[in-house]
Image: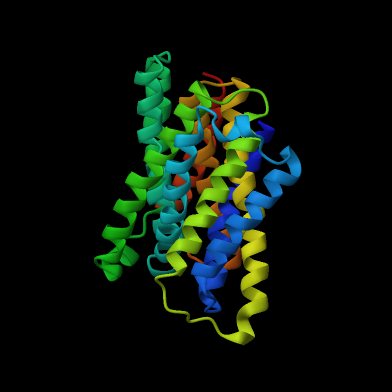
Length: 286
């Protein structure tokens, strides 16, 4: 459970950093690139530098694919958080749990039971109840549809690829090295993107951009490492791991949004939080 807790706190921290950075008009692109360099350096500091065997490991092609998808989805998360809000972004990314859960159940032939299916359906219902805001959805128009849909599909694909790589390729110290190389690929992809991007950074914000990027790098590393190690621990089936992880992120992000950003909760939202907590307990014991 310690790894799940690490992932939940870290993932929530990612959205908080994006929200604050957007509020004070920092350059999100550079924050994201600095974040990936920070996460890669942190990983190599913990797990050591890659050897030749790591560079030809079976998971290397997946690291390249996920690394590119990572930075693309980070841009989507950043834009969605600023334009559509934390709540809408959260529901889009966390509803995507249905994709890796379905993948895990059928591809890896995990046990399918009435209780497990009930828990998964309750998880999806609680995510919707916790984050739904009819007035915000009505006012945001296309933004509340386009970015969430992209985020839903992309996040679900990434989680499924991570599960596949963890199950098929990663062994021993693989999780840290895999994470470090993945982040390195994301950083390099970000540098390539920057060659085609007009600079908009202001000198007075350079320090804040660097600090935000470093903080984001730490929580980003914790998020990926936490979910991989939670899957490695085999305490729960991966479908249950994804369910608990997503419920935890929803509850924590809503609480933080309420306390730090003054977001209001409807009766439906409050009921969703209660159902989320009950669902986490339920999933933990089936």
